[in-house]
Image: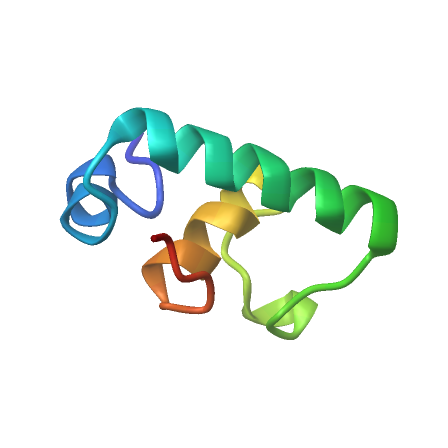
Length: 65
């Protein structure tokens, strides 16, 4: 089973696994608390917030400095 988005693709966007984990965990907690999504819910491939946060990073909706 392949995860979406792939870690290889994400590491081309974010230079560190640790930074990626930190940003996505923070964003997924925001989604849980506020129910604020940057895309329509039916556009996400993942059902859980952590996967959705990873999708937002891949699509460039979250900028990691």
